[in-house]
Length: 212
Image 1: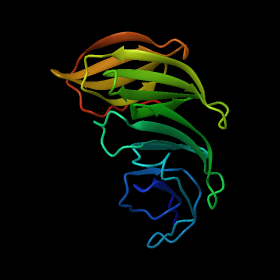
Image 2 (image 1 turned 90 degrees about the vertical axis):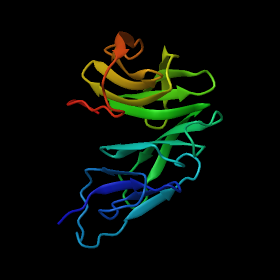
Image 3 (image 1 turned 45 degrees about the vertical axis):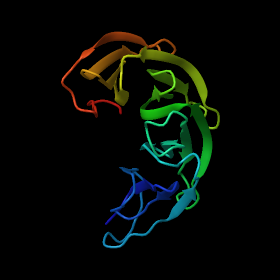
Image 4 (image 1 turned 135 degrees about the vertical axis):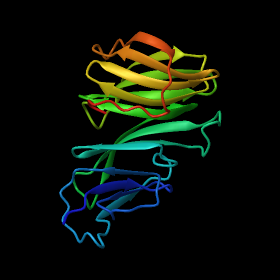
């Protein structure tokens, strides 16, 4: 049998090719070819970063890279959080290495999506009281470049999730009167444009049948 997982622990430890069941915040399939004993697989490699990986909110593994969002504070409500978006090379399963990290002062990364060579970061800014979408160029994994930041709305309680399908990004926010669904055209990553924004009876998380 084969087990293929990448896991980030609450203390900021990234485990590659670990056991099938974890007690950590985020576990995803990494699509790595890892032979092992299904009844008792063990971690092959790990990487600890108590700052950039602390309080992880989300992780996605695509090919040889893990994309991780973490934050400095334990609470989403804190006004002085700094969030971190990190790219980790996991091609060497025994020795995963951080390629680069992008920090967001006073922001909470509430979700992100990867498509082509771009990362779409959904942020809560508690100081300004708004939700924003930052597009990052991640073609060079060692040097993240900010393409643009679009402020979506200020009449929200918090951002919840983002998903992408084709040329469109779908974002769910919570407002004082319910949920809000924002649809953006991202065919030009340097100029995301809002297509529609309105109340919707949707859950906190959103998934599409395309690239997440």
